[in-house]
Image (cartoon, rainbow, N blue to C red; front, top):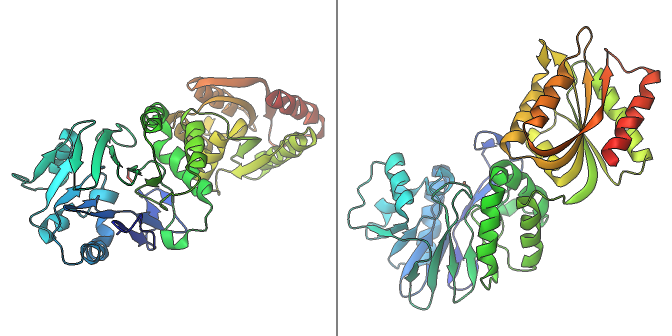
Length: 386
Ligand code: FEO
């Protein structure tokens, strides 16, 4: 059981049936929608859960309340994976008031036809709600990951209710203790664009004495908090987490793949600490995006298609741009049988990003890699490692 303490109970749910989180991310280990009940003179539930799991959540909340009334429903984030059970919560706990900020209530009215007259407790950045011994202070965290997001700090037990921050893919019941892998994939794909805003939240959090981080997805974090905070600091500042090179390729008939594999082995021979090769047509794109941010260097290889760029590479670069990919060194391998154009498009996509050092050597394959092209691959590998 993942209770934070005797008086802060975990009432979240696991979703093991979901095919794609946000209708786009594979979650082979499911997903958790976290929610917490605080028991004091007043009782509070921190966020609801996705409408897919309303009934199970309501039962958990009732069990935690042990027959007591619910005084407040706090809404830190209006996205439906957390606020999706709000209507049912209001129906089940008719005397409960809803705590949110002005934007929370604007969005709530957009999602639901709900009359909250006499039920709204509107808070501003820095305001507090006393529950008796427990005291919640709300801190606005705009764009981590929506504009209305708040985190809440409970000062008596030193708990940070962190909203989506410090969340991860994967159900709690499937958690294997490896936090970083799925937290990184979650962070870069869901919050990656908002590094500046995450940095500002981390600065606010640094002023607090935090003993427990209670996120909206994934396990409650109680030990070694510096590890998680340091990773978040690296990720949100677009720093390099691990030394290594990502070789991301898209290949129609396997010839571009061979070039990607060849340069990967050259990189290894030249002493690259780690080389990761990913097939953009078959591997989980979200995982490749995660690796692009994890490592400081990348080689992209793709063929020309319809006079443009082969779509899996086009999609990858467009996602990297939208996630604010920056401060990296990138090399290009292009392929084309009659008019190789993919290099031009890959270069243009990289030039539209911030602080990308594009290697001067561009390797052009005309259909299939030839033995006499090894020198140019070596030159590119040296440049990307320089
Ligand atoms: Fe977990 Fe932005 O919702």
